[in-house]
Length: 124
Image 1 (cartoon, rainbow, N blue to C red):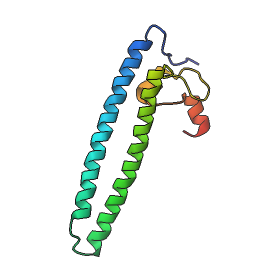
Image 2 (image 1 turned 45 degrees about the horizontal axis):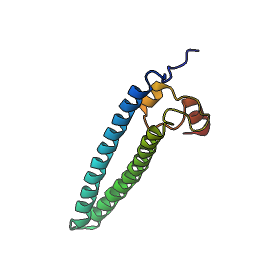
Image 3 (image 1 turned 135 degrees about the horizontal axis):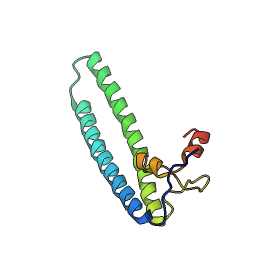
Image 4 (image 1 turned 120 degrees about the horizontal axis):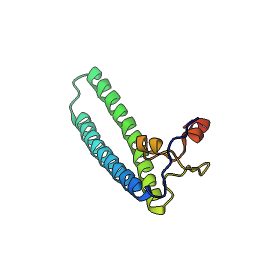
């Protein structure tokens, strides 16, 4: 079985800088989206409900927005932790088995904390 390429010592700095920029971009997108969702939720809460159907629809929408907001907050935490690992020099290593995380996995999910094997065995 062919193994995915690992980050080599020669390419570490370049790859980590790319990952850092990608993570910062993701963080900016999430913060923008959170702000837009917050504004939409405020508008829904401020709109006068004409009947119980409108009230129920607005409540369902605000509940959905809150859930999205919670998921985005969780992703923001993961992104922040990945940026901290880059600064600490531990980025790209599985937190469970300490083996290198394949480059392909990090490119697809730069906030990854585990290799695919550990993620699968832990249900992540």
